[in-house]
Image (cartoon, rainbow, N blue to C red; front, side, top):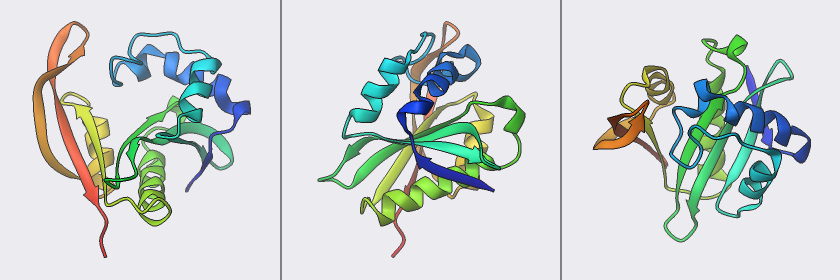
Length: 163
């Protein structure tokens, strides 16, 4: 259904456009939320050795991003994040499929033991994606994210390597 590939420079402008979309970046952390993102910032993010970004395709059409961030090699830990850039592809399980692929990559290729994610409490779509992809809720930080001027909880999820 979905394929993922390392994010290449020719797709930096498209990803910057997606990250600049308020309907998308409202769910991201404060470094991205409410900002206009350019290709240079995407390039810097990709070059950071603690990040691995992948373009998501459905039927060969670029439609989203999945990424590992804050990769801790010594502790074998990383945070995953994702976005559906093209709303025409929502509701098809594409991001869930891509998320499962990047988790497998993290466990198999990077030898990670734990991959975690956080979502704002009101982001029910993202919660469904995580649960569908095998993540389990592990806790929350109360009032730790700002959503349209109101403090909301961050709900944390994790997935651990199964031997």
